[in-house]
Image (cartoon, rainbow, N blue to C red):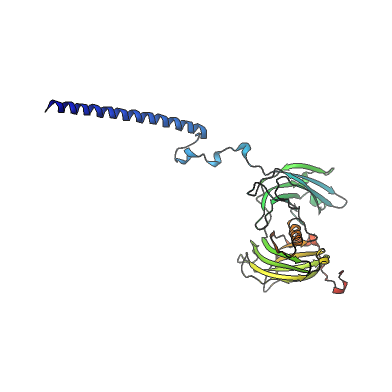
Amino acid sequence: MPRWAIYTIFAAGVLLILLCCLCICIKCCCKGKKKKRQQKTGENINLKGVNGKTTTALVQPDVADVDYGSTKKQRGRLLYSLEYNAALSELIVGVKQADSLMAMDLGGSSDPYVKVYICPDKPKTCETKVFRHTLNPVFNEQFNFQISKSSLLKSTAVMKVFDFNRFSKHNIIGELRVQLCNVDWNHVIEEWQDLAEPAKFEEEELGEICFSLRYVPTAGKLTVVILEAKNLKSMDIGGSSDPYVKVQLALDKRKWKKRKTSIKKKTLNPYYNESFTFDVSFEQIQRVNLVVSVWDHDAMTRNDAMGKIFLGCDATGNQLRHWADMLSNPRRPVAQWHSLLSAQQVNSTLSLKKKIPLHSKLPF
């Protein structure tokens, strides 16, 4: 073999060895840097308790293991008052104001209102006005409940703060439940309390109903369009119902005019889109209440009331707002969803007189 060939083979061998050594050095350096990065990442996310079974644990800690501490979202707080008049057997619940409420809308605000009732009897439900685009509403409203001293000591005052939505279900922000047996009635109670998460044993839901109102003052026409209902209470053995809606006008607390929709068979989410027009003068509209009730039709037995709501001059809260929106927007239909209440609650609040007076005796 020529000498130059031997030199060439030797040089190639030396070059190969040098390349191998260089690759080993580069690999070791990269491994050291990666180890430092992992240690640094481990310090940031706290690897304590990671079992190494999944790679996900090294990237993001489990939500249940995170201690949010002071970053936990607060629902806000409510200033309320309680007073009991023993002579009149009357409980007065004041809803003063709220502060730092949780934002429920995309814009970082809410449209809050407060619903007040007394458990367990729940004779009626009262609502404050709705305040638009605020997390610090000032309500300054009072609600009276007839309740005996013996019942008072077994009852709970419930104040729930909701975010108003015209075309969808109202979202609850938080609630207060005050055990009235623990209250010192020797003086008026007025205090701030943090809102709590809504109780899991919430009262029975009766469903919701959507309808529109339109009033034309010049023609004296009130048009009610029953659009639809959803999540109604099951009244039949098969887990369904045969709902229809009754629309009734009351003038000066006396039953006046009524109409009803068709019956929808075997459904808890009926769609109606049925319109009813009543002759109501501008002078009468100031003294009228509109009662909308949902009934379950039974061919063999008496029809059962599933839920009720009323709007008009004696209404409060969302019902009064819908009525006021109709009056302030003449000739334009105004639609809104309403949560149904029990017939007992509405009847005790409205206290309609059963007897329908003769037309000649009506004060108009």
